[in-house]
Amino acid sequence: MTRLLITGGKLVNEGTLSEKDLLIKSGRIERIEDSISPPSGTEILNAEGKLVLPGLIDDQVHFREPGLTHKACIHTESQAAVAGGVTTFFEMPNVSPPTLDMERIEEKCSIAQRDSLANYAFFLGASNENLEAVKSADPSRIAGVKIFMGSSTGNMLVDEETVLEGIFRNAPTIIATHCEDTPMILANEKQARMQFGGEVPFSEHGIIRSREACLKSSSMAVELARRENAKLHVLHITTKEELGLFAPGDSRITAEACVHHLWFEESGYEELGSQIKCNPAIKTEKDRTAIREAVKEGRISVLATDHAPHTWEEKQNSYFNAPAGLPLIQHSLLIMMEMVKQGCFSLETVVERACHAPARLFQVLDRGYLREGYWADLVVVDPESQTVVGDSQLFSKCGWSPFSKEVFSNRIDFTVVSGQVAYRSGELDLGCRGQRVNFPTSRR
Ligand code: DOR
Image (cartoon, rainbow, N blue to C red; front, side):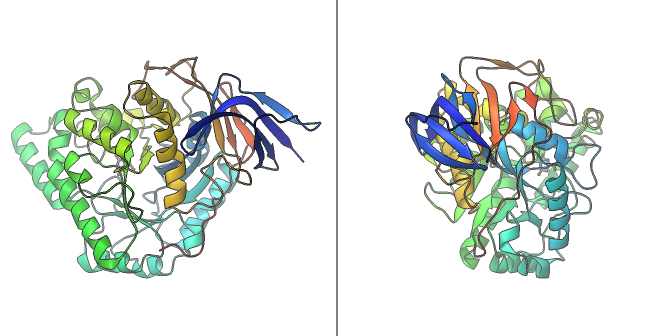
């Protein structure tokens, strides 16, 4: 039986900070106590002066496999995940071919079983044509159903009203939506072409992918969920107006915010241009402030990344040809902790929104908390050491980061995935493998 003892750390869990030892046996947390003497043969990790958090559950990532592996793959991106303290990821269906039925889900799970250092689950994608596959999906084997209610990377727009109604009425799990109104965006693109020709500045992105387009689509999703009594999670909120659609404490209609929308605002386009082009777009400073406040008050229940790597070469194209999305997962916890330092919200709130809430919302079994009997997914952070981005390796296959040279005030020391030390002082254990996440059979 392999045992691991984490000693002397400050556990941040379920709203409290407490100094405790934590004993792991056969992948699960066996005991959490003030002081534990190690049974013989136990490996000891000294966490004195360090923070011990549950591993993050990132409910929105794009790892590009199968079909887009020139950008990224499950093996490389799961390395970036564990180096960043993310122990579980839910991956999106806009790969090639898109993940539109259970057979594709199982294919992706076999790749992950072979290659992933982190725990994993995959979203079933919806399309205008696969309502039957959505209806008959096995809720215990998917993260949820993803609907692109606005077009983005990939060709997965669902815009037929009767199909949308059918999905909201019949989806056997939580529905996660990308909300931007495509006709409004197309009209704005036409306008921008008339104004700027081929040379549209990246700073126009938030005007083209407008706040009105976000609000219209998010409002429609919320209305459909209410009417059809569906469980809805609106991904990556970017405007203050949309926040009015959600209420703190509501467990059926929820919203997510992503680290780049909390970190950057429109002035960043000047220096970073295409590097921060993403959908929905980064908007104004007022929006950023309102979203940070909503994270604090619980109107936003989940913090995630929408990690979306593209190659540096692809990103060098002009506005219409540069793809949207940026690599984020290796630095998401450090970004959140930097915002804690800036006074945006507390560390306990980060743990609630990035670890506990995704576990609760998606009904993940036995993960997301530091609890006896739960899987040992955790991250040890040194609050006394810094991280200079780029000094150590970037594990994402695309090899670039919008945070290049940024200095973060914390350092990730260890990440434990299902009881295995997957990341230790800058080094990965490439032999570590995550597990498929389990969900209950009834989830509507
Ligand atoms: O910026 C984005 N990139 N937003 C999305 O919705 C998709 C993602 C991607 O897959 O590149």
